[in-house]
Length: 73
Image (cartoon, rainbow, N blue to C red):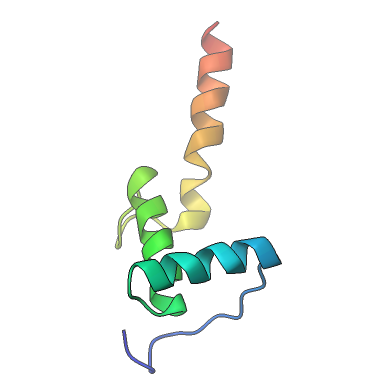
């Protein structure tokens, strides 16, 4: 990542920031790198990778799975 990458402003509860800071320290990463890694891990678990469909079009996969399960019972 470089300083020219797009930036966002993010607000998190104090407990989340503390956890992220602890994880970053434990993994010898910056806080920014830890947040990016956490998001990438979440992307991988939802089946979304870079270059996939627009996230707005993809929707929440967990909600969709739950809806499909409820509909089939």
